[in-house]
Length: 319
Image: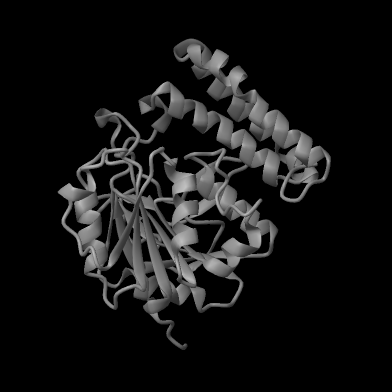
């Protein structure tokens, strides 16, 4: 099997400057062998002195600091537009990579030219707990990280096809991103964060692209460090540890993903599972997060607009 050069890889790191792991992330990227084509750091901290506190090769790492928080989606859009690589590796700032991560992961793209997404084995920082071995679409139309929270006992050591890739360590073929972009945007800016990885994966699958899993490509992720309160780090029930603004994004973005990507037949087939999931989620909100109901209603215009586009048969939109 021919090798692909890592010189065709652009790495994009998004940071909000809220955790202490960015330096470790940059250090791990700096020791990759062979080195990627470029590394792009998108700084959403809105702190002019933040980047000055970091130690990295400023001749190798391109930086962008805006006057507004681009959040994860528009941060990636900015980074991809700045990039030159044929392959794009998107990283959270709380991720570390093994030295040969890119070299191993690139083998997934060699399977065939329709592999547009590759995931490695993503572990927690303890090196023993699985964070993700691939993203999958559930019957209730939510995102499932295979192996999430389980001890790594080599149970996912076989390479193979997956639905998509975890947004914390998301490796994409640029040609695929160009093929599925909407209104000249790769990631849907309405998502800000959460479900953006499932939206990309679902759009890609609808366009005939595939995802692939390479277990020998190892990365480490401090799950939730950037968005949860400290006691929620690595916990399974993410919504318990989010503030109202982020919790609202989590709810809204699932509906938006379904509206954009589900077929009519698929929606009818999976409706019982969708309703059961909604019953559980909205019961929790009614009893423990009642203030979210009013906030959800206030942002429902985004979902209504998506439904109207879908009804009109506009490209990339439902029904």
